[in-house]
Image 1 (tube, rainbow, N blue to C red):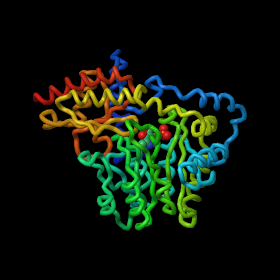
Image 2 (tube, rainbow, N blue to C red):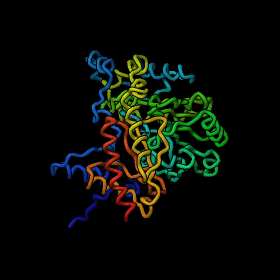
Image 3 (tube, protein in one colour):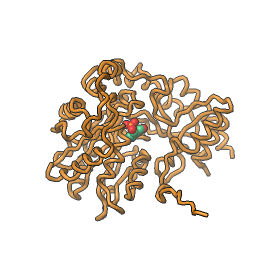
Image 4 (cartoon, helix red, strand yellow):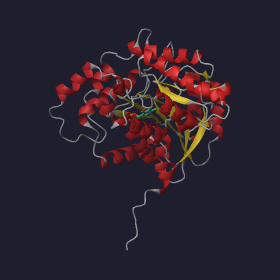
Length: 406
Ligand code: PLP
């Protein structure tokens, strides 16, 4: 009898992506039994009735004829130029040649870590992180090393803490700004300190800025690349969130910094991009319209806008609770509340999320899915209507009341 050689990759056992994991599978089971759930696990604007702006849709429908060939591996020249011009407007002197377009930021996170890492190399990742960063580091034979963005410090990175983690194996510092899951937005002075660390230690800066224009109540966004100057910096952005077109799978990475230092990495990115031929071409047609056409996100985030109202509902839901605290998100489409007090005694975020799903038909993501050591947080998306979020917080409160009594 032949032996079974269908073994999967060993390091997959270290990889977790609980946003679509066990709880999401259980939710599908419940739905197939006829239950109606409120699923707040994925930052998927389309699932909550948002549509990509019409001028982006038009750019695709009007341009789709002739998009059948493969493009250059880095993307359509006109789309890359639109991205480069967007970055130049923000103060980074880049050309279309420094832009890599991919099937979402997701593909480019993986591709760039594959271009960078040798076995055992270390990547400094935020804790909490967006777990694809950890997964891609692991699957590209690297080692995630977490720097803490502590709730007591409004989820800000601590530059001294980052520097203390650097070893001869460290290759890059990853920043997610505005942050998923916390919604923290990083001030310029803090980013300058992190640039200084990267400069002194010869590290690549990787800045996931996919939520760059989703900002509330006066929060500001400072892009990293203009501060980085000659320091090698890869800045990620895309259409999925700000432009509510996540199904189109369009993202980009812009490589800035001293060309003498970035040349080999550029070549590696180009080669890996060539191996996958090119990214989805129709989606690329919308990039110019997205970056140089009408702003459609600010109104959603401003008072009277739907995302603003949703964030307000979360803030009020937490404020009315006897069991929760929140660092109000300055940006992104998420909030990361903490369970505190009597309800937090013996609290387990997984057990809580499961109970909320089973008894109250609400799906959230346990905080520990984002690579934190504490077990008293959960992530919730700001995409539903405010009234639905108010209802969600009433249901959460019932579960936490029970936790407090146990
Ligand atoms: N980076 C962050 C921080 C995200 O939250 C997400 C999606 O939720 C992504 C990257 C992936 O985005 P894309 O749809 O461009 O692959």
